[in-house]
Length: 194
View 1 (cartoon, rainbow, N blue to C red):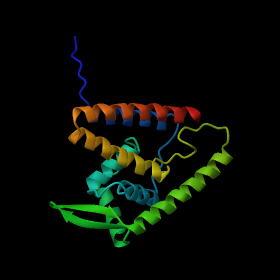
View 2: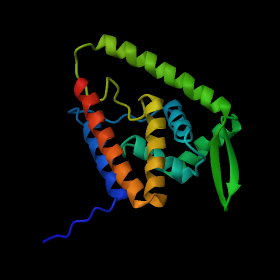
View 3: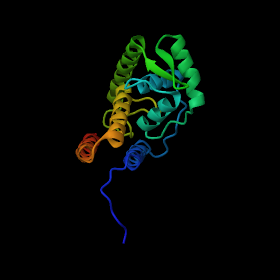
View 4: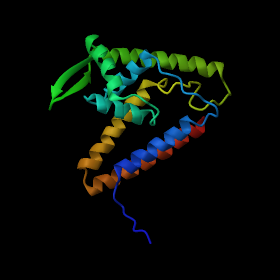
């Protein structure tokens, strides 16, 4: 008989979250993955930096979490994007413990807000044009073509869950588990609304 435990397992919880979102995102039969545009990658990188400063590897991990593992970018692929963003003054870079840590600037936040508004406008137009048709994740097929606010929220949630898992007391972890379970239920409600 297997022994059960009530310990909170962050990696198991995040794996379940990624599996669920991946299953939902891939629910469209015959849906093909399209290569993201440089603008989409830039938006994703900026979104990943909203919650807190991050290394390139942390940016990749945040993008992977927010896209349910749909990203196939590596740190080596993200570094040139980060360099261009630093050059454009959308991101700053500082050395910390022999690693470069990147932060979004106010100009970067403004660009991200503009991108979010543009995606919202495009999604509204797509929704009007495709009223009544179910195509999975909205009417978009690109893994990065979703509301950047979703990525920001997912990144902030992942950071908070990680903090609770690393430094929270048992009682705090139990409270956090209830919050996460309720959030999961509410997300199902949202999906059911169509």
